[in-house]
Image (cartoon, rainbow, N blue to C red; front, side, top):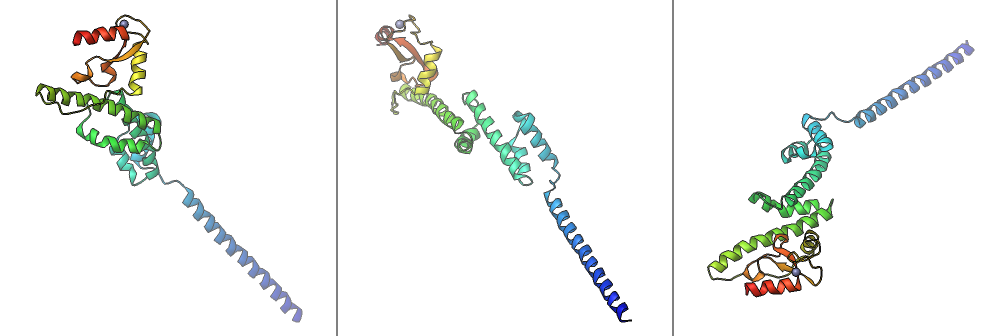
Length: 220
Ligand SMILES: [Zn+2]
């Protein structure tokens, strides 16, 4: 009888231990399931799918509107798309020499450059320089209006930027555009600086010293 009792006691203890292990197994299974569910990517929305497709295959089709739509549901994808979109926009401005930009584009320009600066400082710098050249052209217009009114208000610098000099040098193939000499070359304002000519690529040419002097003599 006594032996039977002990035997029963051992059996119960074994069963309890077994139950403990089963319980532990379920707890661990639940935790693993929970972690797995957390790691599953949420299904992308229609807008996110479109944006990802454009970003990877057709970056020219990216639009500010679509990026804004994705901003709330997938900020990191939106940020990535915005970086590409901003760089593309800035490149387009430069390629078109800032022609045909709306007043909105002009107001947006400084912030666009600052947004591109951290990811592509070279492009941001290039945009700043080219925009300055473009603005110089605008000053010419103001200036011409002023001189027809006999009212010369603006003092402008004669300084030609290194970027413009390099471009003119390449365009004119390092020789005088009048006589093709490659000696004593000078950067000449086609419309003289004194008459409102700008320091821009389109208004600068290469002349040798001789041709430049004879041009000055003719204009007087
Ligand atoms: Zn010459």
